[in-house]
Length: 110
Length: 121
Image 1 (cartoon, rainbow over the protein chains, first blue to last red):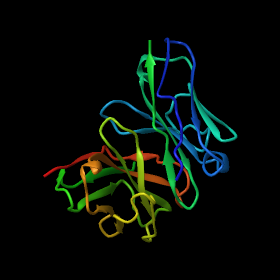
Image 2 (tube, each protein chain N blue to C red):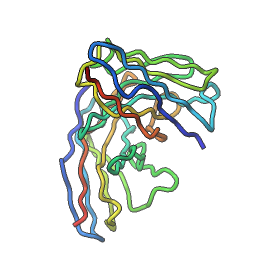
Image 3 (cartoon, chains in turn cyan, green):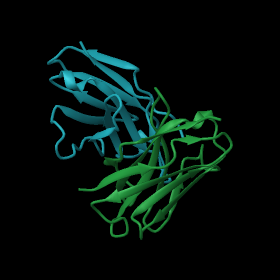
Image 4 (cartoon, rainbow over the protein chains, first blue to last red):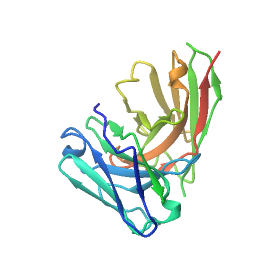
């Protein structure tokens, strides 16, 4: 299994938009539409915020959006809020019923 | 709604076997096309997919852990379990159980709260 690559940290001011990238290969992100994103606050379990590249589960704010181009997926948070400060993980199906997570990106609201 | 709850010892000795169980409530494992997964997170580190199981018992395991991992399902108890043998300090982690999309495809949409397991003598 190859590893996904995410920036260690991204920051923004309240109200701004930020984008987190998740780079993979043609064996994972590039080969499937099964990219998901998770938000994790300290001491809490991860929470699904985006599935299948750009689908938001019920109850997730429309300020969160996902996209994919080639071997790279992206998560955009618009209208940044204090509660968005958390760790964000991408995840991709990697074939043969396997999954791989990215290392996580720490989002800081300035 | 479906909820997951991990249970098991919080401490394991090096070289021994770590055993955890995930109890599913609010839904039936046997009557569901979803698959069920174990994911772990070492302290201050990222998430690692351990493996997945279907309600019929088909398992899919992370190649890096495959030789040490067993995942099983007990539909009569609405539970699935993880066994990790020959543990070392590197296996110290929060272990999460999670629900995966139908037929093992999709996203991990429901998570347990996680249980911390420390490997130490």
